[in-house]
Image (cartoon, rainbow, N blue to C red):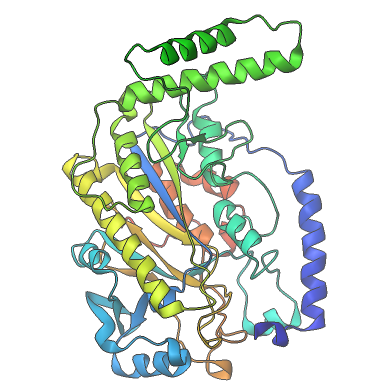
Length: 457
């Protein structure tokens, strides 16, 4: 286990950094762009699908040429997929290696082969570039709470792994673009997963909906004594004067705003359907609602939108092979249906979808599963991207001294930071280059000015 390889010096270094990070967050100023044109309005949407728990992504995207596959199989042991269990990806190549996709994800393979999906290899939260030697001697700053679900889940939403903060990069967009939004209007950041950090701003909070739509009082249109009673009671509450009681006044104002938002959202999405056959899984139905909401953006008065979706259950310490295959199938089918619907609705040129996950997992087996890791592989999907590519550096999958990225049990140091991934997505969304360093202050540690991954050419 990795815990056995961590030194006392490493523990002390990260503990000190955690205390410093807590103090920094307490005094963290709000983001204030120097120029109101730092984000250009455009009809675009970003959809963040969080694979909650830590996706074993080295069993999702697998090297399938002879030498690299043998190394993969030797390292993964009883977790290794057979070469016959991989779907070949057309032209997939990274540093001379070819790749296959898990057999449970044929829709993702089709999207890749048709140029609508790419992968970003060995990506994760980083404070600065780090070597294996620096990891062990404590001379480089590491993400706070490394290997921790709570911390790494947060870092993927903020791309600020040196501090613990509750504002995310989508929240910054809303703070800038919606400064004059009234309380009853629907915001640009819409969550299918309740409260989240990615869409939290200093001033703006996400608008939460469900796979069925917005949340508010809904009374069936037909007149019945019960419906009349509900309507009358609610209307009396909404019109009541509570000016003498600050608590009741605040509660009533929030309730009025929530109901107004619900009615606005319900009216905007009424009659809009997402075509095609979406599976009955929770993830697919959430993405179906996302497609309907994007189609309603004009009615909602929104040009840019972000969406946050969670797919929970990827912490596969046990029963990895069977459970992971089932969950990849759900993900693949849902994303395939979503992309197809966007194309049929004429929206596919304005939507980019991407996945994140707490962390990659150990390359080694714990007997029946894998444990918490660091770097992993993620995907980006949509017509606007350069599809059919593997961006970043897919690592060698050997262990110990044979792998300069392995810090124990196949926990791999990321070679691409979340800052780099998010910078490309932000630029496409409309963020100006000059604003990137304000949103992602660590970005310059990984990329020179103007240097990009190239997701959009």
